[in-house]
Length: 239
Image 1 (cartoon, rainbow, N blue to C red):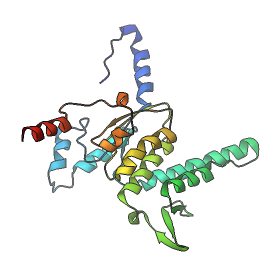
Image 2 (cartoon, helix red, strand yellow):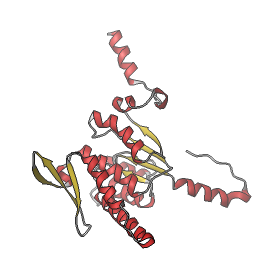
Image 3 (cartoon, rainbow, N blue to C red):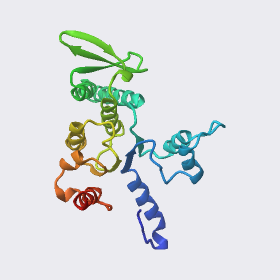
Image 4 (cartoon, rainbow, N blue to C red):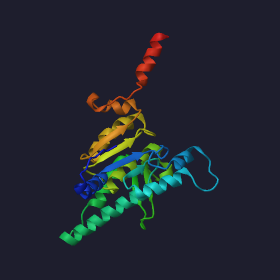
């Protein structure tokens, strides 16, 4: 919540300032989150079985079209990956027009994605319609598709693609329950990932993950009531 007091003669300046601020604030969360910016009737649809074609996810999709800073990271957003490839290609082309030599943005993006995938490699369809993957194992190459990857792998790729395709830099990024679907090692790793991928951002993470909190210093962690670990400890002592 941002509260402002603005004199009447500066109202237009304040509106412009708030607009510019809004372009630098982003939210990532599970799609099953109850988003309070949705109408009350829409929020109720998450817990109902509507028969008239209206549902919570359709309402969320409509809101997302208006809120460019909103991202739900429940699955691999292929369109974001393709958008990232196209943006890298276009930057290389503009560099060729300006200098006479193509840039290496496209190859750098592929290299970064492959580093995230470990022993897998990503391939873009020639018509930019989709992506597939190759697994290299003991000299054998196995063709894979997005549905063949783990939920955690897909989510990690999605977060990376979202940050890069939206060019999210020098921004405030709010992330809710980022640990969902991540192995404990990746819950720990995601902190250094975010620092490496976009170091100019300020990240505010809401989490239930002890492993993720361990990746931070105590000064970076704000514990919110009720403190469940301490409550559980008291119950154990009493019993």
